[in-house]
Length: 291
Image 1 (spheres, rainbow, N blue to C red):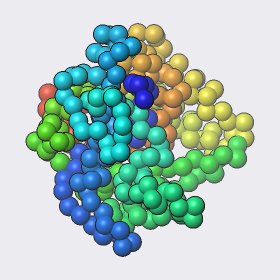
Image 2: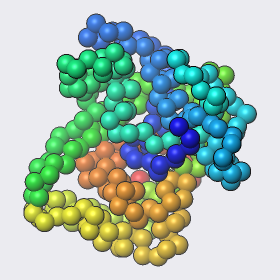
Image 3: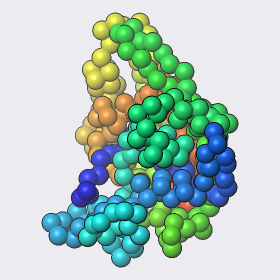
Image 4: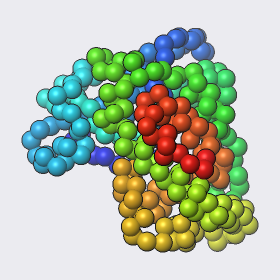
């Protein structure tokens, strides 16, 4: 697959959190190897196929920060592409829990595979579920919460220092090349919402939660657009966090942050990011204000 960088959702953000230490568990009679899980997560997020032909210098610079750093090809892959570092990549929502639970392809190929095992296995390994409660919306849809305590528990279990390596590349180098600007812009956005727009941010989140519970005609597209106009009234501010997302006012980008604020897990994410920044980019601590 040629480079296709899609702007990130919650799981891409969380994927930065999971720089992991080494240990092993046995869960449901299946050996759980954290080293293997760590490598799968980091390579899924930070390593991509690279074909030099057909890419402009600008595209290469944007998506592949250092084409000289290469990694081993996955087992069984017959491809002429190089595998190199890429800027923080989109991770599908369904894929991340499977990586955390170390679900094997052989299990997924079983037609009788019970996907509920994924949640059970995460809870067994990390001591608390990643999924939170659910909220029945007035419009008939279901709002699925994430468990802030689960995010912190996974982070604490897996976190490792900048000197750890993925093959021969330190986590610090991967962070600097692939995630540093993304994290900095996200921190700036959180500061903006919790200082400059604190009153509006809290008011809008309270309004949205009330409407979700009571409005049978609630449309998240329409309501998030209203919120975006209040929080980001000018084009300049909408495009001020480009390393995190091109247009922060988009339903996709802003909606993710709103949902994590509403379910209470956003604080857990920012708390984990503070520890990462302290170890990986201490100068960025000055960007954190109001949260």
